[in-house]
Image 1 (tube, rainbow, N blue to C red):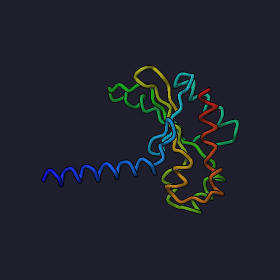
Image 2 (spheres, rainbow, N blue to C red; image 1 turned 90 degrees about the horizontal axis):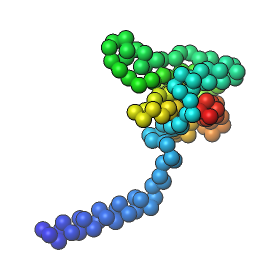
Image 3 (spheres, rainbow, N blue to C red; image 1 turned 45 degrees about the horizontal axis):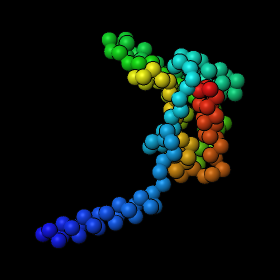
Image 4 (cartoon, rainbow, N blue to C red; image 1 turned 120 degrees about the vertical axis):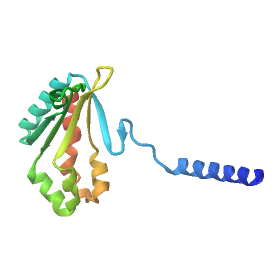
Length: 156
């Protein structure tokens, strides 16, 4: 029994080593397709910056969900947390024609929140993750890649 346990343990060690050799680590601040970036501004300032950037680029802001404000309405406390939902049908429609399932992730979203230490963060779905998730062709990646530049500009 001890020999079998040692053999199994050795085998699991080899499998773990092989897995580590072939598995690419995720990019910093990216987990399960969500990219996070620290903002130099408050939640409200970051949201205002995002709204201004969207207006300047002619991108429609479909909704802004104030999660913390809604929590307060029912007597619950939540640190400042706001979700912006935005897009452009000229960019989104070709994506949905190529892969109808992408509609579940469109319009694009950026979440802005304050953590327990008072730091403010932006989070959004990685365009590469969305491409892989829905099987989008490389030629359509630019249609959703702009979210990265928006987040970066709003955070700085």
